[in-house]
Length: 70
Image 1 (cartoon, rainbow, N blue to C red):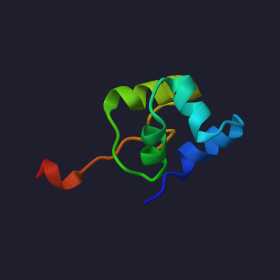
Image 2: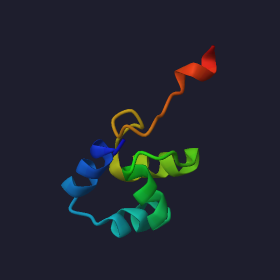
Image 3: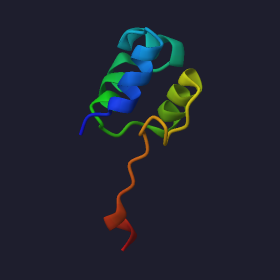
Image 4: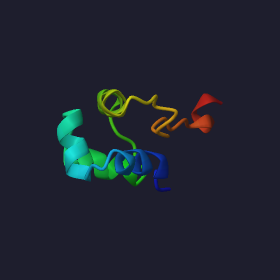
């Protein structure tokens, strides 16, 4: 499931995926994975959030597996 919130926020800043990666000090592939809705490392989530001045929830970067809590 694609992450439209992250992509929308990136575009609101007028940044390409590479620019966001550069500003957040993460790899381009990390930004690509995040926008595809794939899991990324916690430190990468923190860097993206700081760069975009948003929480992980606001960027839809937290994926909670409810089945693992059973």
